[in-house]
Length: 367
Image 1 (cartoon, rainbow, N blue to C red):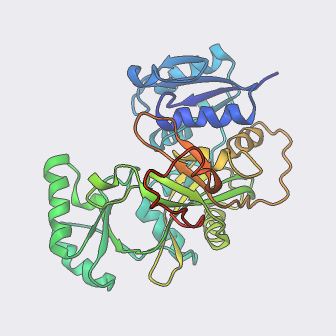
Image 2 (cartoon, rainbow, N blue to C red; image 1 turned 30 degrees about the vertical axis):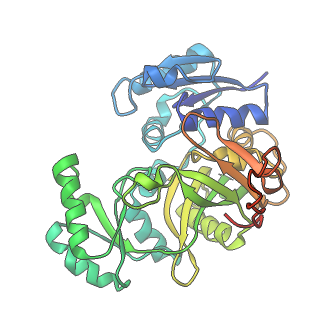
């Protein structure tokens, strides 16, 4: 019998990307979707769709239970940090399979500062990071970083680079945090100041089962969706990304996940950036879910990671000889109101004419 899957957050970009990956992996899957926004849900590509309360509201879990029971769901797949936290906390009340690590691991990973402290104590490369206790303490913290003229200021919880910006002085950090306090109601103690990492920007996604690394893939962010309108000029959401073979990135990511729990299970998406010495340092771990550009990992290489996730969650046979599914020069291209495209470097000039003859084919390894 075909597996019946409930995708939470259906209709969003990441939700529909996940459904695309699942169907590419196994067209027999029956995919049901849910979302708390009626307008977003209308865009869902799932077979059936259900409106549910927000994950932060009391009725969310009860709504999931009703869907699971009515649709005979085999596996619930959360798709945002908020969904992961709510579903993980209520896992005993959801009558089907989940594929999540222990809730303590979820809480640790969703606090970026606590995660950084935890990983540093275990020898995993991370940027030097300090919590902001008040605006008055910023100048002293800035001096402790000893990182030249720049530091990285960001909110310790949340996704999508919320509240993140590079600052060139303590004064800029104070003003940035004051803005968030006065305009968005975010207190100074919600922020951290960290070492600025100037190097390449990587994402590494992996799936694990009972402490065993099953599959891992790596890519590099080349440009950012909406980066030009962001104060930082960057975002965790790529407009252009490419697959890369970077064993060191895969190694650092695997080391970080392995120390979270010796019997770790589930999906993990790691963000890393190189420091001045070229060492990839972990900036965050998106626990229990895939990242928005998951199609780049699922539709290239030997193995579809979303399919592997489902097989592992349902205890079905899965044989992968080499966990690092390394493939080069596939590009992920995204823009507003279009389905993300995935192209090999050799395809980029097919069907495109050079109007004035001045353009030359770039090196396949470049951005």
